[in-house]
Length: 214
Ligand code: AP5
Ligand code: MG
Image (tube, rainbow, N blue to C red):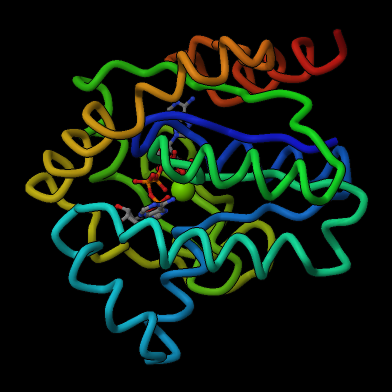
């Protein structure tokens, strides 16, 4: 299965990707997680990306496409993968199509989680993420079993630097201007599945697996 989870910031991409990993045993490729790891490691790429991320802007396509090219070439992607937060621009989507065509593989489904902007701020400001595996929780809507401890790997939960009401506005602006047009791109490709992302986490997961079984 070569899958993509798509949607606005805070739509639930990371949350649903974790269920896809468990079911299909394929890796999640989150460009956001890869960039945050590069920032933590203080690499040149991480330091360059940090300013864009802190401002809620998109990191340049050339950096992102380079990351994906390297990641898809790794052995664990041979049996499939889940793209999370990539692509986010038409340029990235076209680069992905070319890359996959060169690898003789194709996308099976794009799962779009549709959530209106007015629900996004509450989701993002209440989010807690795992400092180690990147899993997402929410203080009210999706609490971890033990307070501030990850259910998956027992590491500490933290608040992401870009999870504040101010940055969310820029992130939503970038989404509507640069990323939402990809809904059309993947609908025309015949792989788009649009789901109601406002339902409870478990209902969205059930809808996603129903769509994937068709
Ligand atoms: P990234 O890390 O990808 O962030 P994002 O797209 O803003 O998305 P989020 O991770 O915020 O949301 P999510 O959809 O994963 O939601 P989650 O499941 O956590 O990117 C960060 C930055 O990196 C970007 O701003 C950009 O600068 C840069 N970047 C990354 N990729 C890039 C690219 N390709 N090109 C250029 N720049 C790039 O859920 C959110 C919250 O809601 C959680 O608290 C969760 O518990 C809760 N929740 C989830 N589902 C539900 C539900 N059904 N009901 C109620 N609550 C729910
Ligand atoms: Mg995420």
